[in-house]
Amino acid sequence: MNSPKFLLLVSLLLNSISAHSSSSDLDNNSWQALRFLKKTEFHTEREKALFFNACQVTYTRSLLYSYDNRTPYQSPYCSTLNSTIADKIQRNEMADLSIKLINNHVGYGVFAKHAIAQGQYIGEFAGQLKKIEDRSTNIYYAYHSKGCVVDAGLYGNEIRFINDGEQHSNCQAWAILGHDGMSHIAMIAQRNIEAQEQLTMTYSANFWNSCSLDAYQDMRHYRY
Image 1: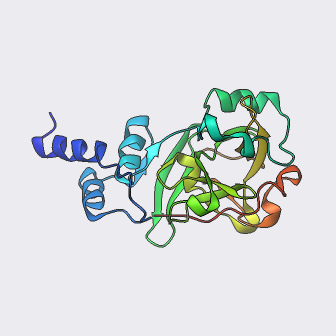
Image 2: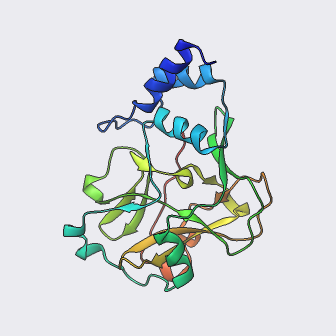
Image 3: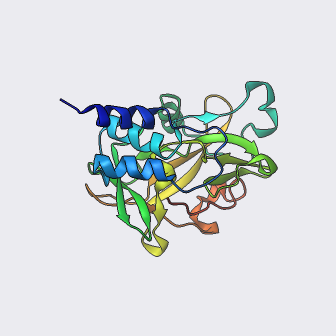
């Protein structure tokens, strides 16, 4: 049976989301709670829920935007028409992934729990669609189109923790036209990825697939 102290810490974690947080660092209470749980790897949905709450991030697999103000951001530039991937985005599908602490310098990374075939859809870089000037003061965002970004500072999923693999990346971002008429940032396996292998991508201009080069200009490296 879990101790009252354990249950209290879990309760604090589940209620630790701050809608006004602008820092990319975990606060001391969150670090202490994670240390108490003795976790450096997060595999199950429950473990990842605790982790995201400790990071003060609301977990989402969806692009969040206002239906009343989405017209300027609909299908910017030349999003790829791929109904199969668009179906997966609509269903909020995500590959089976783990989050692990690599070291204090790199921070956390994302790992495949099972083998992922080349070309397979991994998940969407999700967050809040915002004008560039309205983005939160952190480095958890990706350019969506000229004038707006997908801000994953307060809302996001495992994809936000993918690290830079430089010349040895195994993932690539594609601009996919969703069934909602919006362009979505989809992560695709660039090659076969082995089970327990870290997911990485190249954070540079040629990182984006040819169709999305104009739509997506850059993505920032982020870590806790």
